[in-house]
Amino acid sequence: MNNGERNTLIRAGLSRRHRGDRVFRLAGLADICVALAFLALLFGSIFTKGYTAFRQTVVLLEVHLDPGIIDPLGSRDVRALSRADYGVLIKTTLRDAFPQVTTRRHKRELYALVSSGAAFEVRHRVLEDPGIVGRTLALWVPASDDVDMIVKDVIPRAVAPAVRRLSDRQLAWIDTLAD
Amino acid sequence: MVIGFLIVGSLVAVLTTIGIVFSLLFESFRFFQLVPITDFLFGMQWSPQTAIRVDQVGASGSFGAVPLLVGTLLISAVALSVAGPVGLFAAIYIGEYAAPSARSAIKPTLEVLAGIPTVVYGLFAVLVVAPFLRQTGESVGFTVSSESALAAGIVMGIMTIPLISSITDDAIAAVPNALKDGALALGATRAEAIRQVILPAALPGLVGGLLLAASRVIGETMIVVMAAGLSANLTLNPLEAVTTVTVQIVTLLTGDQEFDSAKTLAAFALGLLLFVITFALNVLALHIVKTYREQYE
Image 1: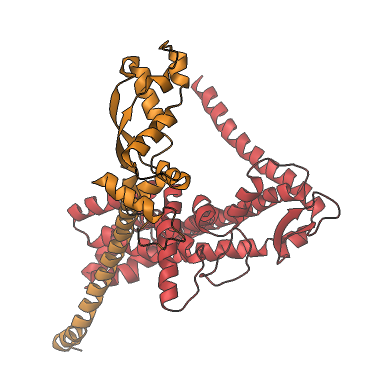
Image 2: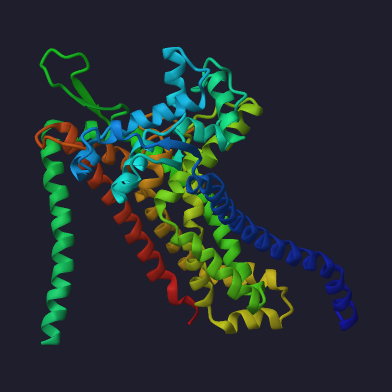
């Protein structure tokens, strides 16, 4: 075999070998992309699923801090203030905001719109400054978890009423509050 | 003075290891007095109950570890078939093809995968991968369990990618440069040099690394606790739910335990089994690395 023949032989296989090299290189690149895609998917899914937890649905309530309920004796004593029934204040506020709600069952549904923590929010304000007792306080209180899920669209409204945790009435109230 | 500290330090490490092994051995011995060792190693049924009353239904538990071992190996096989090729090719590309700037960007990004807590991987498996697999499976007519071995295995594989790729990287870097240069000088393409010269020379390191990764995957707990099943199921179908040795140890030892029942002591026997397997894998890996290492120097 002389030089010329050898060169022809080598050239004949050259494009095939170069293709093999490109395929091998692309395989490596593809695998890196796969690994990076997994990483992106992992972070992406954690952030998209998790970010709503940093946001809270709140409801603006005009709470009248009735001294007859908070502190009937008028002592303004810290112990009396901290033991008062602030839940009643929230309930009264909600009833005043929706005067058309009259039956017991509907009232209970109405109360369920607001988180049970709302009363503690009011208590906290009163203890911070007992002077506000008797006034009317505009306060953002957390909505209940069911309302929160609806507003964030984690649970769609289209879910059948039978399996939904909120009634159509409650959904309507949410819309009124949102306006 | 310094030497004294060094001796004390190494003694603590050694004695702790010995203590762990002996506690496993003693408790396992107590277990094997209640349940014959052949029943444990070859039994096909895992149902670890013990009776509270004498006349109770299902009072006699069965402690056959085979379904757990098969489940563990199934999930590990899935994990390694994800991590093995991806890690290997990624490392080859980074080491042999990538420009230095790309290399310094890609490598630390991949290392991020190694820094994610396993509980986050578990969350990922349960909330993202498993539902995705089930929906995809349903749309093409397969029944995929919500706790399929496939979901747990894939996520475990993702976790193992950086381990495999860094081991591959080390093994390739340890091959003398003269070998690669020689191949290139003879006219080999890069792919040919890698496939026919570098990889065979690095093979002992690669096999050893793969075995280390296997023992890591077999012992991994959090991902399978969250994403794999709880009930023993002797199957090789990765779409079904299986349980693993580690999951069973967790469930057996969570909460208050009585240490004279076979149910609790079974956890130690499982621990011993796991220890023996991973220890054997590690010894094998070291042996392979040691025996074939200096072939080219």
